[in-house]
Amino acid sequence: MNKFEFQNPVKIYFGEGQIASVAKEIKPGSKVMMTYGGGSIKRNGIYDQVIAALKDCTVVEFGGIEANPDYDTLIKAIALGKAENVDFTLAVGGGSIIDGTKFIAAGMNYDGDPWDFIIGKVRVPAAKPFGAVLTLPATGSEMNCGAVISRRATQEKYAFHNAAGFPTFSVLDPTAVRSLPKRQVANGIIDTFIHTTEQYLTTAGSPLVMDRFAEGVLLTLVEIAPRLLADGERAYDDCANFMMAATMGLNGFLAMGVDEDWATHMIGHELTALHGLDHGVTLAIVWPGTQHAMRREKEAKLLQYAARVWGITEGTPDEIIDRAIAATDGFFRSLGVSTRLGEHGIGEDTIVEIRRRFDERKWNLGENGIVTPEKAEAILRSRL
Ligand code: NZQ
Ligand code: ZN
Image 1: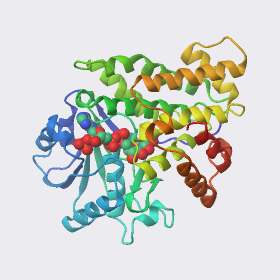
Image 2: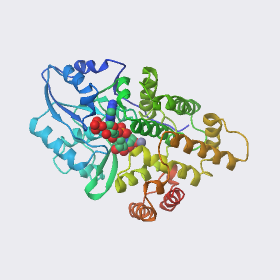
Image 3: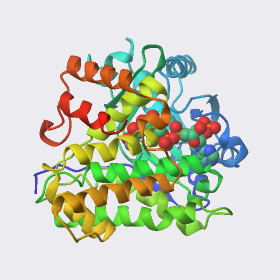
Image 4: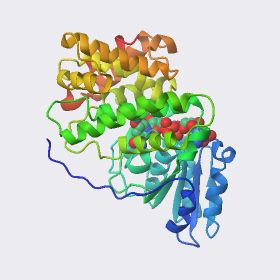
């Protein structure tokens, strides 16, 4: 078990009707910038609930933040927030809106070009206070201090972390899951699944408690996925379990004492940057390749995963691992996601470009840097 520090200051309001609690967290009279996406919140009633909760505040709206939030859009929000001198920013949406708001909240405290802190040129400034109303379980952004920002103009996508930039509170109302299109449910299930494995499928000897928690998240997702994707209204408890799994998957909790991987994510981000694929889809494509290419380094945990998540115990280690990878790939495909590069019209050129970028950035990814640029290329090649 590795030594670790753990602190998570985010206050969570969980349950149906909790959007009204926004009123308890933001002082009456505050000037609040409300950030949101392309309009789903206006169709499912969440916008009205937030506006009602903010009735004693002045609200400045910034809508239109896209999935994989774009630098050029967020820069406009920073300018608006500065011009209006807002006291608080409230993100209402999925990971893209919450991540974008983290960038906005830090950018309002920075005089230079905020891209500087995305690329690590300067330290990320402490963010101005912000909170979140989550509408899509997936990223854990509502309870972590990370954000991922895209820049379409240069086909880049990078993550940044701001230790002083956790949301002050987040509202998790599971009924938001009911209006999600199946595509976004699938994305959220896959993202949560792979956040968990990034912190679980690494080295043997990690904390037994964390292994069991991680397996609990994975088994929960496998159990509820078919029900969440069936036609008809989604049951409250399935929505609530989905939301809890996603938040617990990436709020720092599962990372206690463990080695972490994240190679699948970093390779996936390049596929989004170059081709605009949904984040969850990129992970479903890359994940089987990562486990296939790194099977020797990850062998003990892959065998544990096979047995405890999929009940696969018969055969040689390689046979068991092959079957566990196939079962996982089959699970992703059962959610309606195509898991091969070729199925998305992506081929050799992209693999060459990602290899070039990783060589240039000298990126050795994965636990202990075991995923070299050469391995990343092999991972992608196995997914053609
Ligand atoms: O824009 P609107 O109209 O609101 O529609 C959104 C969007 O099109 C829709 N949606 C959200 N909630 C809805 C809904 N539609 C109906 N009903 C609802 N309740 O869903 C679409 C996708 O939303 P988005 O916020 O992009 O999805 P997600 O939460 O998957 O976020 C993806 C982004 O998060 C980053 C990803 O890289 C990507 O940029 N990540 C952030 C992480 C973090 N902060 O820790 C970690 C993750 O690994 C991930 O990288
Ligand atoms: Zn993710």
